[in-house]
Amino acid sequence: MAPGARHRHPQLARVHADARVRAIARSRRAQLPPHAQLGRTRTVAGRCLARKRLGRYDVMEPRARARAIELDPRGRLTRATRRAPTPSSPHRHRCLTRGNRRCGFHGNGRPRMPGWAQRNVIVIGGSSGAVKPLLEVVAGLPREFPATILVVQHIGAHISVLPELLNRRGALPAMFPTSGRLLEPGVIYVAPPDHHLLVSDGAVRLSRDAKENFTRPAIDPLFRSAAIAKGPHVIGVLLSGLLDDGVAGLQAIKACGGLAIVQDPADAESPEMPQNARDYVAFDALLPAADIAQALIVMAAQRVDAEPSVPTALIEEHRLSIGEADNPMATLDDIGTPSRITCPECSGVLWEIKGAQPPRYRCHTGHAYTIGALDAAQNARTDQALWVALRALQERERLLRNVAAAHRHRQARHDADRADAEADHIAVHAAQLQRLVAD
Image 1 (cartoon, rainbow, N blue to C red):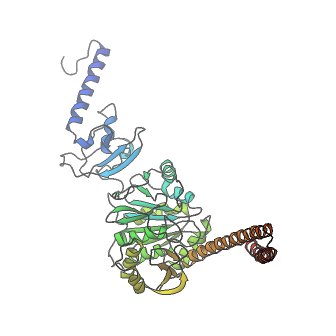
Image 2 (tube, rainbow, N blue to C red; image 1 turned 180 degrees about the vertical axis):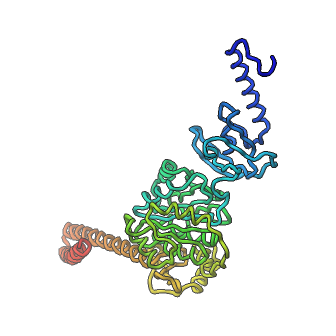
Image 3 (cartoon, rainbow, N blue to C red; image 1 turned 135 degrees about the vertical axis):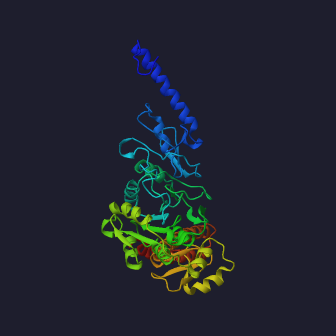
């Protein structure tokens, strides 16, 4: 049939046209690199191939690096990685969808956000009342956010569903990582129950080392390890919570050239932790939770001009905390001075860290406390010790009554009276101690 001639049967003509469209689609898919093929793994640019009429969508291979997206069975993003550059194409990537936004690229073939941030590690810590602002922060971050996010929430050894909550609220995938997993941009790693979350050699490290500030996972170990490993490329965020875990960690981030964001205490459900950070840290921003996400987007793109050296005392303290110090007591002598206080966890001697504000303490087994956490820990141990003493006195009284009864049974009146007198004496002390504990 000559070009431009009308087909006798319009319906048959449409069938032939659809067949030609499908043939063109198959040929174009075959010409694309493997990572751009349609399927379970697809590129952002390759998504446009799913359209029915290729005449409206001219999709070419992008000259920039392809960003591979893995989807779960429901079509939700589960992982984002960066693949090696593909051979250059004579055509630029071009998408004629509305506003060039559906495929995640600008019209010139570049992503809307930079492929790799200058400050590419973000560490977030929180305790009581921190879940709500954390969800608000994550909800404000775009899918193309180019930094890795690591989160510590005080959960102890209890079961946590925090990754599921973050996945429902935000565009970035969240998970409990395995030890050794490489840091990936645009992914949120959450500290698992009863494990410290650390950064080491560009990867995640999980440990069950000694508790810090009477908790595991703790905020300070994450902040400290990230500051040592990534220096000025780190942004630390401290949210709502009690006591002052995270304050020393933010100080470590600042000492290594990083940035610090503190939630405004007036906006926090539990303002004690943000207040301590405000008082002791040279923070870069004091913001309500609603503004933190936008601050992170701006700060992540900031240029890092210089990388200051990591303080030696910080490195030694970190090695001590992860059990890698050659001589723990000698290390403690270098960074602190022995105190007359014992560790509430192991009853060992505590060293007071030199120049720390607020004052901090460490023992040679690895336990660490700020002065606020030490006060809370000693208060808990003292209360426990008083109840143990009360139990011991009551049990002693009960035993002496039984001894007196046994003496009376064998007609040993003198021994029975002596046991009764001692039991009466202990009963008086037990009553006094019970009043003391109850008040």
